Length: 447
Image (cartoon, rainbow, N blue to C red; front, side, top):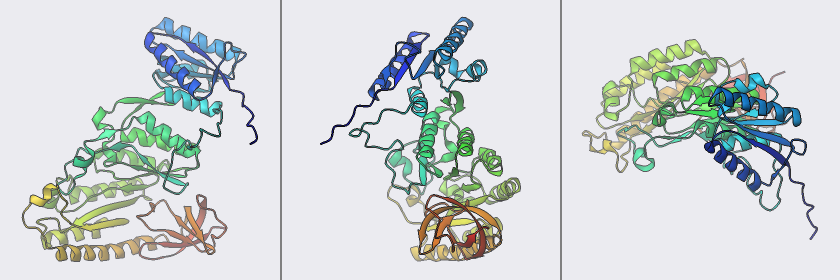
């Protein structure tokens, strides 16, 4: 067997300032560096880059930290800053704009991400078996980004809280680092998911985290804005799913209008009858929803709204079902899924009176989907003749199967590009829409 030539270990210089808590942070960073194969350098001149762990508690400490950063820049030129001073928005960058990266305190992962960006870790052919983005079951060009687990709601048809518990939001910095890792791995579409995306951060009282050395609230709007910033630096789509219709959802619509996020909202309205929504323990009512839909479309005319509904919920009358159909006619939603109610073991709705016969629930579901098929066909027909950007999923027999901003994978329609045989999965393409059906579009490559 041929011998593998040893690879010289990259060397990192380290300056640790501040209190014992900062010293522990430094120890953790140095431990991780050593675990990943990096070596320590005793001088600036002998280092491939330098990390400075700062203090920012009082003015003297700030001056000492800024001086240490300046000394490291003069002696080496490649400097990553971490620690408390990094949490003071813009202080380091204004004094030393040439630093490679800035993170806040107790942020080993952020420091390591910056190190990886500027001094890739040594490759080991026997231990580096897992890609940086982890093992994914989706195609390489899109990935799901889970931001929380569990749910605080107690919808009577649902047992998710009993299985997954109450809402637990992931730290915002951790979410953003995963998003960055996926983008670096070639992912072109991030699909933000959870049980309740709008509630992100409620459980931690919107605690402030850190991303790229600056404060970032654990809240849907701030996360969406940061993801939009990441998308702007990369060729990346960001799509929001499972958005509960809280008032602050309105705050992300301008980000869609500006092109930072895909103009797409997946909002499970579930019904339109006020009484049925109350029995479901769901918020809102049809009048409020219609008013908000009008406001969203006025602010972002390109927005696609997907929703799901339940027919045959216990106690649903024919009049209440017709109320739902009237709502759909007025709402003109772009994408709709519908389920006939089915009892789930442990669901509170099982105890409600007046269960609707299964055949009636299924018949209502079929009527709803037939109505929506006509609405969808008319909505898609409005797109014929337009130029749009699509993301290619597959290429077969001379044509490409792609998706527009209005199409989430697996659940929405597709754009068939008849002359897209030379395109590659994961590539973006500009197309012109030539025809439409109830759910899909047909297109050709734009000239």
